[in-house]
Image 1: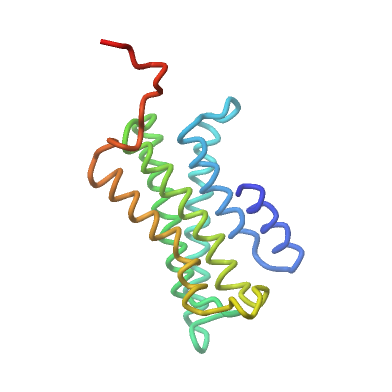
Image 2: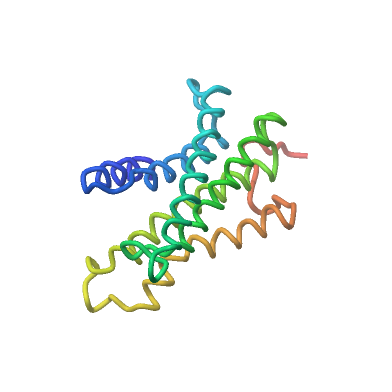
Length: 187
């Protein structure tokens, strides 16, 4: 997924469009990955840079959203201003989460798993939404059914809501994490 985000940025640059959507996906997926397993070369300095990127992306996207809102139809190239505000808010929330993590230290338990889940699922939502909504013309006509494409496009958000409820709101990990049988000692 990180490589797909990189290629999305490269293709966007080639077409003269903004590369920040692909970079935001890379940001979400990389921070989700490092939440679960830290990378040897990443440290606090990289976390600060990533947090700054989230705040910068949020501010730039809010500005773009307000610019688009002033256009007739409140959309530019098929992208409505509401989508820009939505992405800016998600980026702002991610940046706030990064700030809290930097201030409090490493996350543990359900908070750590919830951070990983929402960033992974939201990165996947951006990818599926971009494909099923933005590139529908490349899907074969017999299966280009509006409700099916919409369901596939938002499926990662539905899955995210379920798992956030299961992990964070129920505050339980029962049934999710199971000890390997080699660790279980006979009584």
